[in-house]
Image (cartoon, rainbow, N blue to C red; front, side, top):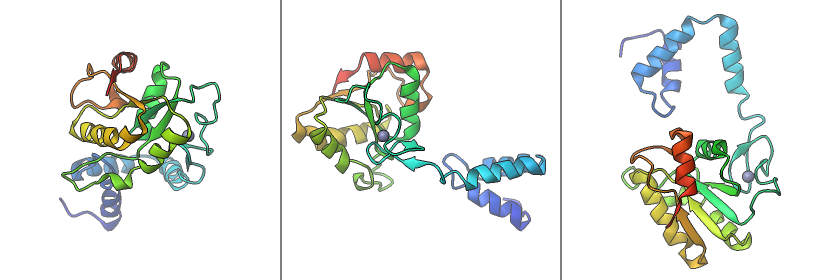
Length: 199
Ligand SMILES: [Zn+2]
């Protein structure tokens, strides 16, 4: 990496903490920021600084919202016995966008990744089991990504939830392998939800 003044270097280091941002991308971002007017940078800085001021993690489903319980958990018109498990909040947003799912959600907050030593203990699995039991959930839809991490996570969930005897389904495997729930086109995701298979 070329030697840059400290301020550029510092921002690059910060940006590289984001998923998918390596030195090249960070460099591109910093130099496009440098071309922006100062008041735009102020806007951006302010948005970052205050991001967590009003955003809460829902105590029930771990979705991000400006209230807890979140607007989905508070919606009594939704099916209270149907629960869709997603790995991250953007997956929830993608499924909501299709408009075909009318149950509740549970956001795990990540995946099980054996290779990188990320075990299931840091995920919201304990309270998922508790929810299935206390909220009398009738079906759990496992909406993990169709990749190795997603499959490993689904497998772990199946084992963890087995003692509850809850019906488990998984998104139809018409999804492209290695795809990502968040970035699937709406038609494919709708199909995958409508034709979910027993897990
Ligand atoms: Zn919620």
